[in-house]
Image 1 (cartoon, rainbow, N blue to C red):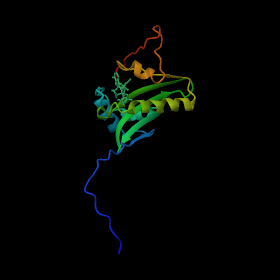
Image 2: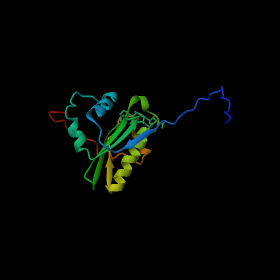
Image 3: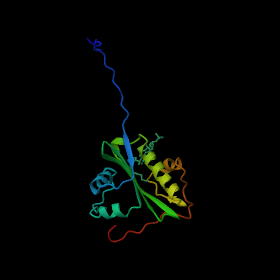
Length: 152
Ligand SMILES: CC(C)(COP(=O)(O)OP(=O)(O)OC[C@H]1O[C@@H](n2cnc3c(N)ncnc32)[C@H](O)[C@@H]1OP(=O)(O)O)[C@@H](O)C(=O)NCCC(=O)NCCS
């Protein structure tokens, strides 16, 4: 008869690594609206998000157990320029390296397609964050400008 080993009465807490899945598929409008709202960027004009999803050149998403917890998107002509937009990590998952991993993957994509320059507009306080990833501010003679349209 097979001998069974005695059951141990001591249990050790095992810290399982959190599995974050990075993928470049398209998100749903509901998923990204949740992240925009979480970042405080909701402006009430999100009925057209389906258009944004379809026309964005390249998405980079982070999911945990299927839930979208991070995103970034690239608009590019595929040769001269790429712009990075809307890098957002869900507020309950910040400071775990997810934002930088999304950015590294977006930069790698731009490198792979051979685009010559990558632009972005850093949110307040994030200049050194982006410098760590190789970005430099443009000169003072080239400030960012924006013009709102009737829908903006
Ligand atoms: C900015 C953002 C994407 C960073 O994502 P994250 O996954 O938390 O960042 P990481 O874990 O990769 O990096 C954490 C580092 O960034 C720093 N950081 C994050 N947000 C910061 C902010 N607003 N100002 C200054 N530093 C910030 C942290 O202090 C931390 O620094 P450390 O590495 O020296 O400890 C996330 O805070 C976010 O979604 N913010 C709201 C939306 C936003 O402003 N997006 C940026 C648009 S340009």
